[in-house]
Amino acid sequence: MPRVEETIPAHLAAEAEAARAWFSKERGSEFKLTGILDPETLPEVAGAREMQLILCGQEDGQDVCLRERFEVGAADAGFEVRHLDEAATGPGSPAPLLDPPAGVRAEWLEKTLPRHAFSVFLFYRGFW
Image 1 (cartoon, rainbow, N blue to C red):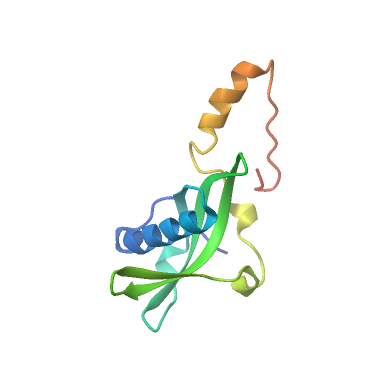
Image 2: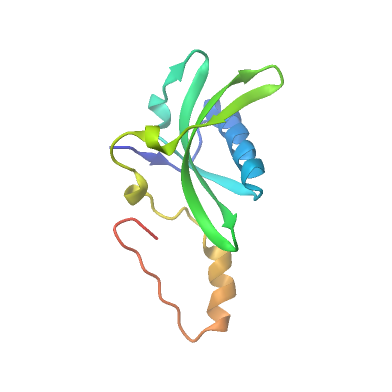
């Protein structure tokens, strides 16, 4: 069963940041790196490391957190990042295991509560 770590290990920080920056640029929106799946068992093939990251940001005015797969390898000027197809993830998805990262919705909550008499939060089997 996949395990999500909120803290990126120091030896993976540069690669994870390169993937985050690449993803933010591709999506045209700034994302934060909020987690990594199974950092102690990341496969490495031909000098490139495959990693699954949890990235949170805004798209179309909505707060979103996404689990994305990347292959990150050393290049002349930093890292070469390749986004991996979701279909290649294999059976099962760790998405139901993901809790909202601490503070991701805090800004939304601070803006929303003053505008309404009450707010309803729904949490169903790990989806939020």
